[in-house]
Image (cartoon, rainbow, N blue to C red; front, side, top):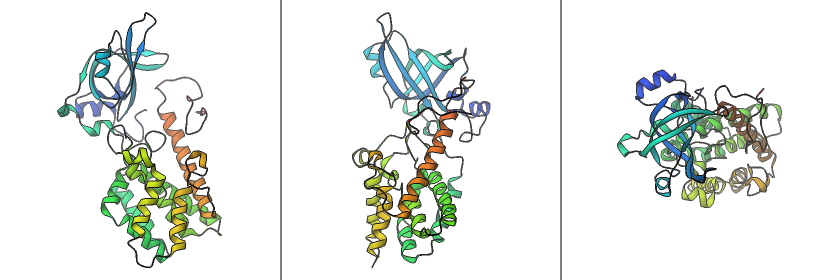
Length: 332
């Protein structure tokens, strides 16, 4: 990933402030020493038959491919995905991609690791997004729907988790604050759609937009690498989101059952099809609208992130195959 809107600091300033080398700063021909998170790692076999480690190293500015030649099972055990390693080596360029030829490495000591060095952060201030979130809740006219939103986002622990969570592990809005950024973008688009499609029930659509991904607060950990939690792996964010909202609604006296069912349906169906994880197909106009609005925001941002991740100076008009688009993306 390039130093872009997510990382507005200049590389030189970052280096002087942190005393370390970030992935985006590394240039071919440099000898480097730095601490990285091992994103992926495999023990492979070279043409000569000798084993070597092939890995992807990461920090908050992006990723670097890395190779440790003439390696061993013992070394590989100390270079697995999820570990922090301090590496020393030389940056080279292979087929237009920067990579590190590792000479030496060791597992990083706990005191050497600054978690903030490994987690990208939204370009939008968290405080501003919290203010916008609470304003969106306040602007819901239907009293019952507003009570539901107050019950969810009035929970300070949940609201703080929502504001810090990524929206995904890597496909779109994969940074601290990404969930709030994605959600508020969906809300803004939903407002515009309601002005055009006047038969839509505005308050229920806005509520669905605000709540559709709330389960990601329990699905994805906002720690380095954004690993899935046990709950996320076992249940997924759609079911977790429905459970979160249903727990909040159960505390409200005389809450209307039709509104409860509609809100839960919006969460259950927002992925659009069973093939892509929806519990049910969208069955109301508002649920249909939410699915397409949410999908639009995720795919447009995912495209932008994919292009930002292209290596500096890379040639060609297309990205590699992207799962979020189920195809390559034209960069023009």
